[in-house]
Image: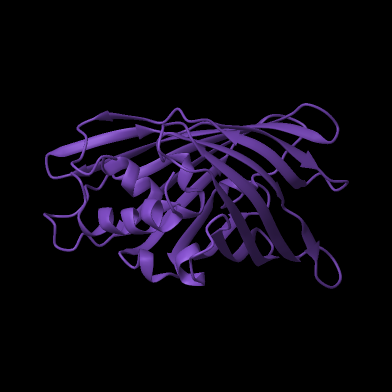
Length: 275
């Protein structure tokens, strides 16, 4: 894979301006249980198409499912997969995601404290391909979740290991600080690319009311394997605001990009349902 800005920042911004045609509100933080847990998430990005046609069709969205099933007292198996749909005018396509398989580690309180995973390079675009090589559904999926761009990016194998601790503030468990730090090694499966090492990180706070929990996070990704980039070129950040049911029920969220590279994305909204 070539340098991070060329492949992700510049390409994704280009797609947004010239289109080719994540119970937990955050799917990654769905917690393990004594029984298998299945979560479904639908996200939709509001993208400024720069006056191209009538913009993206109403059904342009990303649908993901996540399975978390216990395999021991302190571990659970995780599988994550999805599909991206996109349409512009009479053209449309769909991209099947790269599947993620992994193990999450469970702390003494029964919550996830860390994980290891592999994202396999099996993404496939179906239908009418756009003229920029990716297809509209791949571009909109990356714009919807640039922090985990390789879920839909083609020809990339990703190895990940991270910690996801949280700690209570004051008495009780109503208010918590939440942290995340993940190291990711991305390897292109096609000739001509370069391996890249990313750090993904997040910090936030959540507060439980009687029936819902409110959450705010700042999440980011940084490329560590390129030495000639300034801070703005090597990082992407987003603000996440969510509300989720304390005793199950759906979760709803909005994500707002914090970088000029993604100023064509006004916001991303989503809903998560845990079964």
